[in-house]
Image (cartoon, rainbow, N blue to C red; front, top):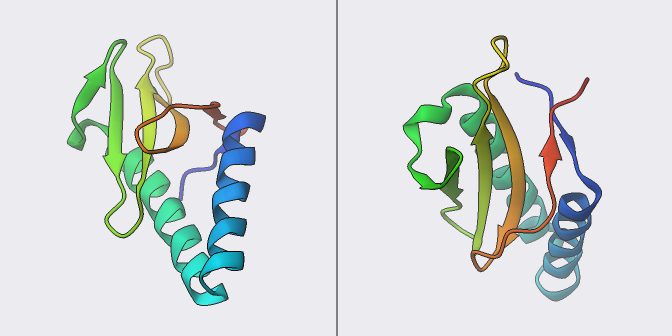
Length: 103
């Protein structure tokens, strides 16, 4: 499993979305949302080139299957050990915040 961390704006959006599902749906739905986000991030970090480039520089997007959110990563050719960095979690195709790998 690849480690990662969240930029504050991305973490805020992730937390707000989780709270929304917890408050307006159920704990089960909120748990499913978190599981899908975490699974999407791991999938993107494990096999980033599987997902289409939607913007430059090499920004790739993973659309969640059960929720109206996307997860983005960006390529960084200067980093040999890990050439892709997760960017953000976004609702309705609106990018906010940055997710940075753990250091």
